[in-house]
Length: 175
Image 1 (cartoon, rainbow, N blue to C red):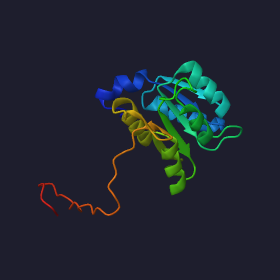
Image 2: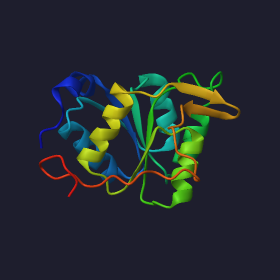
Image 3: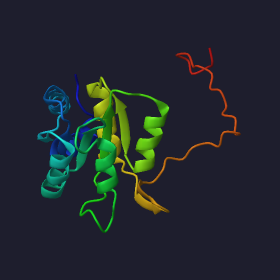
C-alpha cells in the first residue's frame, strides 16, 4: 500500500500515537496498521486508567481509543480528558474505535468531544485518512456551553435540500 501523500509523510512519520484498548490483539492490530501507514512512534495502554496516565506522561499527538473497556471506558476517559483546567492536556485529538455503529454512539462520541469515530474492523486507509484530517487539517478546539472539543463540523439544516450531483463521464459531461 502506498501509505501517504508525500505532503503529509513527515507529519505522519513524526506523530506520537497512543493506542488505548483492553484487548491485546486489537492493540497489536492497530499498532500494525499505524506502522504500515508510516507512523513511527506508537505507544500502548491496556485500559482507560493506564490511558489517562499515558496521555499525561507522553503528551501524544493522537489517541486511538476503544469505547468498550473495563474500569474506565472510552466515553468516561474522554469526559475526563476534555476537562480544561482539570486535565492537563484537554486538546489531545481522539479517534474513538468501536465495534458498534449505532447512531447514538456516534452522536454521543461527537457530543463528548471525540475528533473522529471509526467502527471496527478498521482499515489502514480509514485510519490514515483520520490521522491526516487530525494532524494536517485540525479543527480548532472550542468551548460551547458544557461542550469542550473540536469545533463541530458545519452541517446543513434538515430543511435544506442538497442538490443532486449527476455522475460525470470521462469527458466531464453528465452521463
